Image (cartoon, rainbow, N blue to C red; front, top):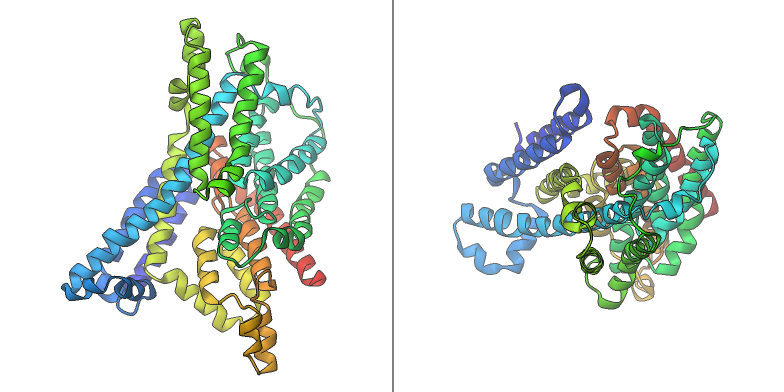
Length: 470
């Protein structure tokens, strides 16, 4: 059996274990970590058959020609252990520290009952009405923040608004759809749009102008459908189920709320001005909030101090979710390093050769495989054409094809939409979905039965609208 085929089979088996977390009684984090390690082991042991001719390995040898003087097995080891794992672990750590910082900030605001400033203003108990309110707030907030942070904030709010667990699952799932749709039309709303923006494939105004309407349609179609079925009212949590720290003063409540929200909102601004990665901005906001809470409660009563200090809040952060992210992202990274995702991208280009079909295929695949490497593969498939390169093309058919790959061209715009929203089709297809799954313990099979078709209808509806208006 080909080692590449073995990697694909192991990935499918691991993915199945994650999906069947509840029936097999094994936490998805454990399955993801085991999957990750197994894939890297197969890559290491099968390097002799996998790496020769591998695009990434050949590029590595060109960049570090001194490695070619070493024995072949040492070249493989250097590439896998000292280059690929280190590089992918760095990319994964950025997401993990971003997530860890955001979850800690949100938990700190919650420990001071800060979210009561919002929940007290939402008086409706009508399911359909609340669904529309939360979806639109999420849609626009994820464009200003990003879909991951927005999902963490909004799912935390749900705990203050809705008592029944299954109701919270449904609302959290709709929040995931709205967050991914909102992140797709903003240059800072999703990792994929950030990649395309930094890479020069899209401009900030270009992506807003080109994708806003289709992203809105992506959210509205599922929202309209469920509005016909989600009738009646939901039950509010008992006051005793709210955070036990009722002794927080109104002044402290507002201070921590605005500091926490300000820390989250400042991340895109921090990135724009410093050009440092977003997780650095998140850690900056966390450190400021940490200092303020330490000073605020240094003379508080022991019980209140225990509840409100960030050192205690850190213990409440959902560590299994962090490990799940680590496992699934590093598992996909192993597929990328082995060249499997690059081969998939080339296959799509060869068999489809239609920008709409290629982008939609990438979007659908992003519900299974992380959209970041898929977007990277798409970016590597085609160059960004400019006026000079277009002027050198004489064949009319080739020229028409090349025009789709100029900055803000059809391929890049549609890729931003499909890669950003396709992940909503399955709960583990996006960072927002994984965060919601971890926070609310949403069952994979439940999501697939209740939400996947809704998300798919929005994805296809938005795709159709994009095709018609372009």
